[in-house]
Length: 261
Image (cartoon, rainbow, N blue to C red):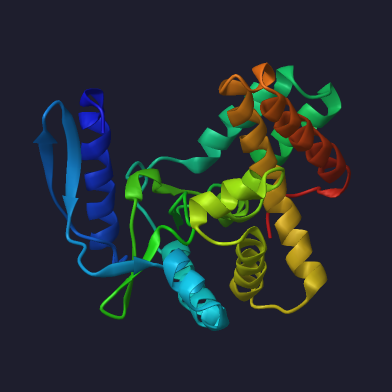
């Protein structure tokens, strides 16, 4: 980490500690250390392998990892956090969609903002970056790492970030996903579908798709804003991603009338 990130490192350590106290199995943060001009956290994490690596090594066991992954996700989402203890994800998402007012047709922007505003406040713990690199197995125990994105809110916001990691980030260039998760793009997408169905406790494909589309609305809004803020209009790849997000949002906002489920 760079020299200016001490506050971020300390914040991650504090969030991890809060989650651990609330019963979430995470690597225990021991200390903040300085190495040269940089800072970092020291965690208790020995002999662990990420779910990405485990699935890559044994694709036939994917369903086992889906179950473990979703069990921990549900444990997090059923954990209640006191007001002010963690950032409010709804407020963050409202900033995202407000930013897009300058880039979307007015009717679409209005509906997008209204959809997010209508999401009820929740004190449920969300991880904020819940993908298979951040879930690890250590001595047959499932742990979650990278706690700097911990927040509270409605689960649709969690599902949106999951959709991005498994599907949307690599939609135009599958190598983005395979380089990040070290899994083939198709495998990542299959894991997402299976995990969402298991999370919703249903095999009804229409129901799974309905909730997936709610996650997609938030996910593509985030991806579009992120791409624009990273000077996406200046590159061919960036422009393609922005157009992709606009096309998805245009279609989705025609039929998605609530983000809750």
